[in-house]
Image (cartoon, rainbow, N blue to C red; front, side):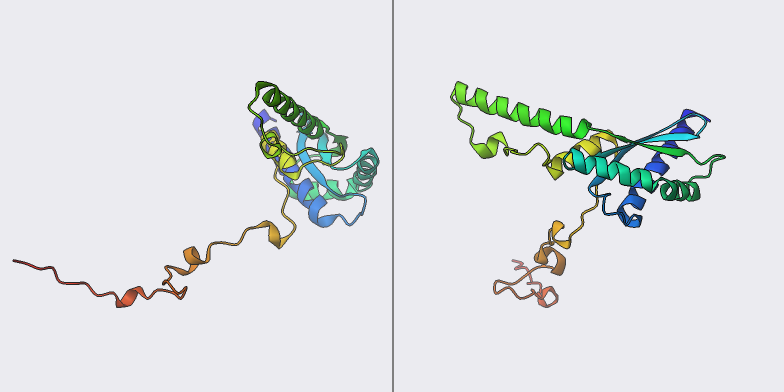
Amino acid sequence: MTSRRIAKVAQAMRETISSCILRGLKDPRVRDVTVLNVDVSEDTRTAKVYVSVMGDERAQALCLHGLNSARGYLQRKVADRVQTRYTPVLTFVLDSSVKRSVATSRILREIAAENAVHDGTGLTEAEAGPEETDDAAVDDAAVDEVADSAGASPRPKLSAEAEPAGDPQAENGPRAADGSPADTAEIEATPEDSS
């Protein structure tokens, strides 16, 4: 198979596995998982699935154990979606690059804040960035940013409050001064004075 075909298979597998983890698995151990990448071998018999799990080491180990328990189910879903001669055997690998990049950005923010204090520019805490007190707590925005840069699909938003409501004026048209909808049909054209 060509490398383009392998890349398409890997992309389809990543999408299938991530949607099955999100919607199909009922295992309580499998939570806060992001599928970052899938490496498929040239003969498509094996595939390494790189995942990022938010939480401490115990939660990560439990999640990997749950994913390994659901391996047969996920392989069956992949076989239904991807038409290959062999169904790839999935191997789940914990990818800690997201946590490393968040820790690196936190250190860089701290250094920038220290340099600003020494230089006399005096950055405020809001300009320097939020402080993270727990290494296990990872900023969701940072995880999505790193996942986007790695080519992974963004995690879906789970609440209706995550989407901001649209502007009612933009949706319903122009408004009058009292807030009622303006009636644009009754506007009359004024005749021009001709001298």
